[in-house]
Image (cartoon, rainbow over all chains, first blue to last red; front, side):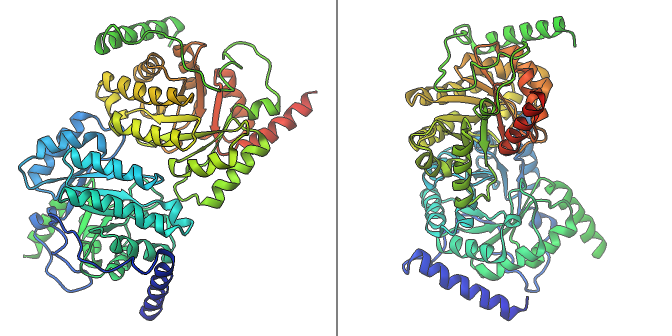
Length: 277
Length: 277
């Protein structure tokens, strides 16, 4: 697809959404930015300086979402989060109080997933879940979009659920990332969800849950960055295992990486930077 | 493992649980049975008559939990549920109102999953989710146990979350199935969760989400049936694709099957019964 064809597709999806959701929706309003360490640092697709290893760590959500993770695993995750000064540790709702207690007063945030990983909850339940994790100390909420509503073209629902979670997060000064599960979406669906997420006031779009049929791709990150522009974050997640993949995703416009391999990636990054000096 | 060794293991786990959770817990009290068509029909491990194809259908939860399922898919699922007179259709929370509207007044129930598929929510959120799906018309709730709490030996939490959902379901005359995700648990953990589920008043234990690393096995069904006795249901789920597997699971003590292949299984069953007459 040429750049022109992509522009035309984005324009077409934007018009259709405006008709579906109503004229008052989708103003490109000021976004709640909270304390996101990543958003400012790369605009994507531009030639920017590669971050230092410490700078890279500040772009990583150190993630443990396996359902069988036990409390000692979460404790270790938090210790690693502090040692590497990652952006956040990313955990399931049940573990938010433990993580928040261990990271209190540190620069490492607590990222909680909501509606995860299937996204098939009504907006009110997503809002309740967000309220609970925010009350428990989460500083960032990664919500899975209602994929069934997306596939059914029910855009007002998608808009409503994101706005509901954003409203809850705003009360806590927290930010919201909207997970698309890109491997399950077609091009126009990806564009539409990204536009709705932007219009509904989310701070980031995010590629994948890590539980779906595919993870972050360079092409998807580039697409999302193109759609949301420079004022929003793009989080790449799912299957990020090494520094070269991380570098490619950042180069494509990612401003945050979700991975359970953050320690390996940061160490590889250090080695690679040592070599290039 | 011999039968005697298994008995000794069950006894040991029971004692440990009693110490962990407190003496007042785990009475083998009368269970809320609701309108479960399956519980009475097979006790498992006994020589019983094979059900007719129609009887088999009444043991099946006709299931569609893929996150990308769209509204027309759910409508079709309900039509199939009615045509085959399955026990229930089993859907994600977002689709409960649609399914309840389409199945109202029929013998086909609506089964909603809660805390699905990771189970890593605090008890209060599971209760809220259960309340929402019950209010929307679910007649059965399949909740995923908090696997992280199980792995951490935090049995009072596991007991509390099941009791919370059971209490909510009781107000609606609905029944609760507790999903163990057996592929992630060791023998003693499976025994312990089944005992806690029984003690907390659940109506069924259920093997798998279908999203984990493994599905229903004959051995797990036999174990669960042995642990919970004959007064509770055992639902086998995950990877059930044909009539011979279904027959083996029923023979091992399953009283409900969760599958997306229910129509194929019932037709195979009809053919097999035609041959044997």
